[in-house]
Image (tube, rainbow, N blue to C red; front, top):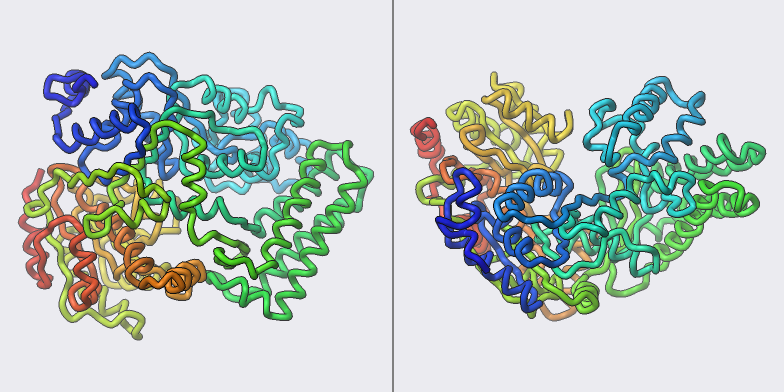
Length: 636
């Protein structure tokens, strides 16, 4: 490969401020070799390595069909609209590029028309949004709803005017030729480089197995960025789930078909109402929200068993009524197919004796999910890779535990891959300080959040905000945010009070804010410079031991004669902590303090595993030293 990463290479000549980095060059060479030989490659590239350019340049130089999958839609958009065009221009690449998202990210013209036809039955705000979307649809080239500025991103209209794998009519749709998803898929088929996300990639993999037409084209090279997410996401798609959202959407489509196309079949409305009511009744039987439990234990409850039987009866009624009108409405025909699938899924979920799976359920304030998840996806993923010969690259900043990649490679079934560990080029010894305060309050004791807030206040105020407080639970997040708001004059932002994007914008605009958040802010958030120089983590992010999926994986580990804590719980927590810690230093000039409020980091033997897996920062237990570090940081 031409040395694009040299001081006088293509990237340096074309990109202002580009500086050669040896780890980046080494990664690019390894990616080039993986593409040429077809040997899978697993690379942990520490923050600041420049891993995106390190895989993009070899991918574009290869001249092959390339799929790049990212961890989220936000990263997907960033890669497609910022990084890929930059490298493309630097290398004078002439191939075609495409962005492909799941169906639910594109406006569905048929469902939009159906809602317009049923307009008289819609609330005024929804009808207003439908009118705006009809106008926008005629102007939009790609129908990507993230680019629509006319309708709020949290509007209730979106689920009504977008399709899913369940309710898409496919080639039977009257507007198939104008469909934005079909156009996006055609662009992907014709392109040389296609950017997708893990959820879409894995959902598509499952669809192909069932014999349906694929959405993602075949490729010679497949690159997974943020690959640490892959095993957990894959387990979702290789299992089965049935949710109240699916059932309520099905009920809405029965109602819509009756109102617009099969108006002489009043029974459709009745069976839709019964299905919606049965789904809501089942949710009420599950009790308090915010809980994930064991489905095997749940189904042993007589009241739950009866509620599930009534739900099955409601699905059977929908099936029987829709069957009488088949062929009269494409929307109703598709709804009939879904009723068939959901009944089969429900039967599958009730057969809880199958080994190798975790059976679990989850409920929020209004919805529930019933699921079975395989304990390992290694064999399945190996099969997929064996069927698709070509280059496979897996990369992330957080794959290793104690400088070993075995946890990731074993979970995904890529033990034969070439591996490469590239440390971050940042000078953590000078740029950072790790503080584990002394005399920390005991977690879950009355008043512990108040005492912790009092302990942390001097650091936050000395830093004039500019702080992320990352919590391991929603309850702690809300409680400690309340304490901070009651005792500090600085603006305190709380996850959930507005969208993630708006919260970040508010944080940056304020310049002195404290953002209190949980899981979704632990990764995929990039705040550079002085805007963020203090990250506080409330405790080590061990998954709750009551989580049924974790319990099942631990029991499986025990049956294989291994230690469940060291093989399952500890590695998961280490990867999660590395993600949270990675929010602090995002650039070569960044400086800041990381605070981890968990005594176990220094008092338990396994604390060393965490510390050895984190960047090599100086350590202290003295909050005053942390305050001094923050107040003496040079201004930029």
